[in-house]
Every structure is written in C-alpha cells, then in structure tokens.
Image (tube, rainbow, N blue to C red):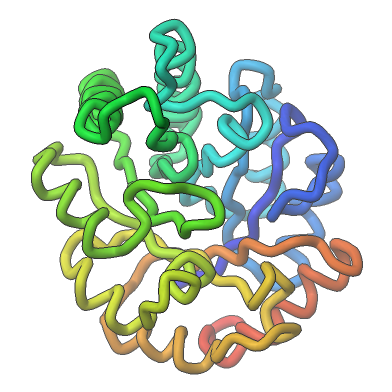
Length: 271
C-alpha cells in the first residue's frame, strides 16, 4: 500500500479544489520531498496539458502516477455522461477518452465521479443510467487496457449512484471487464456508511481509495475517525494507492505536510 497526493494540472482554473495547484516541477518536488510516493492528477481538459513537461516533472521527482481524477470535467466545465444534450454528452466522452489516453502513459486508472452526471426532471432515471452505462462502455472499448473506477458520490454533489451498494450493483450489471469501484472517505461517511462496510460491499471491485478529513480538511485536522478508516483499508488486504484529497487550507504547504504526518503511521515503510 502506498500514499499519493492530488495535484490539479494547469488546465484546472485557479479555484478552491481538492488538490494542490502550482508550477508542476516545484509542486512535484514538494510532494516527493514530503514523503509521498505518488501523485494523482485532477484534470479538466487533458488536451491542454503539456504532457511532456508533466511526465518529466513526475519522473524527476521519482513519483508514481496511479490515477487520473476527472472531477473538474464536470466541476469546471459542467460536462457529464448524463447531459440531456447529446453534443455535451459526446464532449464528456471525449474528455474521458483524453483522460484515459493520459493515464495509459503511466499504466494508471481513471475515475468517474461527478462526470457521470445527475438525474434531471425532464429525463427518466432509467434513461440517465443508460446514458452513463453507454458512455462507460464506449470509453472502455476505446481503451480496454485502462482501468475505470466508478466512485459513489454523496448527495451534496450528485443524485444518482450515491451509495456503495447501488454503485456496485450498477457496475456488476454493466459487466464491463475494466470497470471497478473506488471509495472516498467523505462520500462514504456522508451517506452514513462505514468504510469497513463499504469495502465489504465492494469486495473484489474495490480498486482505489481517497482519504480526507471532515469538510475536506487536511487529514488530521477534522473530526473523522481516520484510524477506523485506515484500519478498515489495511484489514481488507488492499495493496494499491491511497490518495489524499483535501482542500488546501489554510494553505497547500500545511495540507501536504499535515496530511502526510497524519497518514505516516499507516505507511511504516515511509516513516
């Protein structure tokens, strides 16, 4: 099991996002020097990313890149697989494919969280889920070797596929071989699940994990029981990457360092 930190690529507009923003080389150096072994990329429009510079900075820092997070494709540009407008659905799919092309360079996975979209009043829920499923199938068909991880997203940010159970049921019914599930502390606890129960529900589908504290504070600065969450992850036998995904409060330097110190006991090889 290894620890990564979330970095927003330069295509993500300066904003209060759950990732560090800044010059790529200096930021990668800070992440690595703190003790993290990986960096997860939060993207909006991967086609605008200088991939050579990004890869060079990640390589120079000696970091792994385990996953691409697509949250700002929806958060910044409002694109989703469930948009009633077919042109916007198509653009969302193209952004996902671009994210998968980026991930393929690193042997990484790509998440689908808010990008899946929402139920709307003028579209039947069954149709919404069908659009989401078709989009995932299309993307998986284009990049069969790039894993996709569907993320349960809590009621404050989504209105479909909120819980671990309904997300896992959707994944199993869809039957796409490269599709599995990722879990996030904030989404799990907001939906009144426990991390242990969510992991048990996901079973073999569980592939990736995001850790944060309450209100997306740096790990250790909030009210979540981080010990219980991480004990559940460890006890499950999970051997992948855990990514810290928090707001950079009061600033990035604190968020990066404080989260690492809070997580250090669970990664003794890096202590």
